[in-house]
Image (cartoon, rainbow, N blue to C red; front, side, top):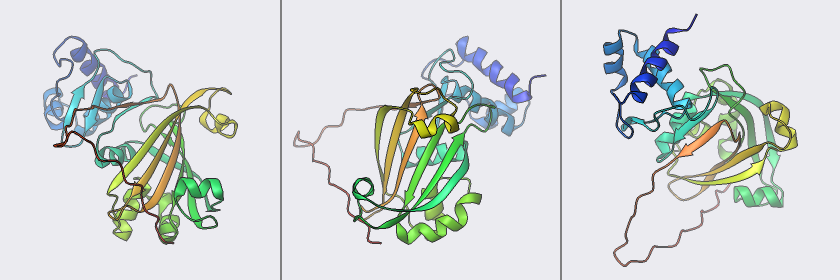
Length: 261
């Protein structure tokens, strides 16, 4: 027997395919849909989550639910995320489940210190975890190693197991240290051998490696995350707009500063 949210998801997908919610338009909000369909808001939210996983819609805080495709682009267990703001990244953390696999202290060698932008020999906390969809019974979405600067290591070690959101949000909530900017790099790689079993993929499977460096208001790196997403389970959507500078020349980016430990 199909669950109620699955029935609602199918109905909404049919409305999208039939043109009731045209491509590129914003759908009614959760409250209005719940009233129209005679179901709870949580049922609508779960149904919209299923459509988001299928790539038919994208969801952004304060921007609503936008129709991205009139037919499913991916099967169950995949994940589609529109990332344009720090809030979008935090929303991803709230919409997926984290299962912590290991918490350990890492002493930065030359390679790791370059990634973390810290002196060699400095100790950072590493939290390794799997993320999965809260709706479908499916393989993990990704493996993530999060490195935390020394000054925030104790509070993260103490609270991360029971905290549902991102580690950056945890630090903001309990240490009052917000993220001002995220530098993100996406690279196509093969799934490392050590992650073949945890991610439930075949050896040599393709993946996206997403590295994020979290900077505070003083341009200091205090978190670095590196996630491995099997290629068939995750995609990023973004919109690029032309932005002209008064002089016609764009200013070069400024490298981040080191955070003293």
